[in-house]
Amino acid sequence: MGIFTRFRDIISSNINAMLEKAEDPEKLLRLMIQEMEETLVELKASCAGAMAAAVRIRREWEQVDAKVLGWGDKAALAVDKGYEDMAREALLEKRELEVKADRLAGELAESEGIIEGYKADIATLEEKLLSAKDKQRLLIQRHMRAKGRKRAGLDMRRADSHAAMLRFEEFEQRIDRMEAEADLAGPWATSSIGRQRQGKGEKAFTLEEKFAKLAADEDIERELASLRARNAAPSGPDQTGL
Image (cartoon, one colour):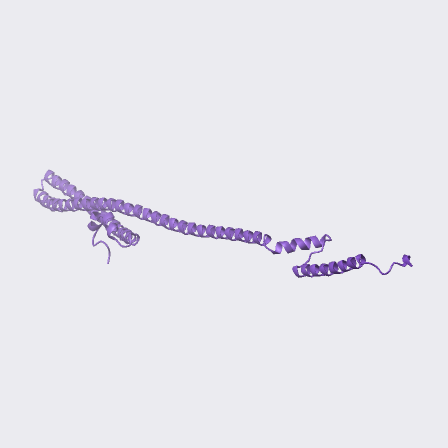
């Protein structure tokens, strides 16, 4: 079932109002344009038929009109020759043909009026169809722009996500540097320095080794004190008093 029931519905239709109420304006416009184009084809076909009929009527009218003139000439000739009965018959034929000619002239005028009406309807419908196609083009452009904006929005969101990941990676790298600096400032740094000194000829001792060294030094001091005390003690009887 079409959107329009007849040609006049198309002409009197308010396309903008119909589109505003439509759930799918693009689909409605496609259907409108399709029906307008089909109606336009039918109008042009009807117009062509009316024009062909007008040509036939005109041809027949011209033939009848020529016969009217012919019977008039024959009636005049019969009068000139004194044949009034023949002239009367010729005039009767002429009268019948004149009636037919008048009827054909009326049909021709009516056909020409129909043709003009078809031409006006075709021009109006073509204008309506052009307007509908313009609206369709604008709707398609709006749809494409909307799709472009949507795609651009998605691209922007993806770009923002990528930028966020980059910022996260930079932050993670900064944390890694801070942790590395903290490790350099930690206890292992002293051991590292000790190892570096050892590499230069200086001996690095552990805490246990230092206490062991202190104990050894204390033993040496005690033995040294013992030697000092023995040297300071008096010797035996003086052999010089012998």
